[in-house]
Length: 78
Image (cartoon, rainbow, N blue to C red):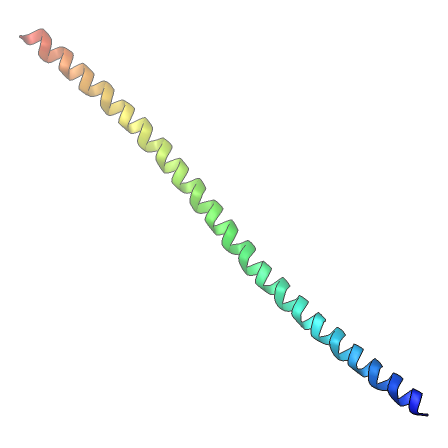
């Protein structure tokens, strides 16, 4: 009978440990979901910034060409 009680106690401890691990796993999965969403947001932000940078570079190149054109016109006047 004493052996049965020991086994029961051990089994209860293992069940509690399993439940604890299950809860910890659920918390980790929830935390991972939060991090995944944050990562997706950061990636979208990076893509937006890269698109902005490309647009600014294109605009800068256009302005550079305009300045070159104006300088050539000024040189032609002199």
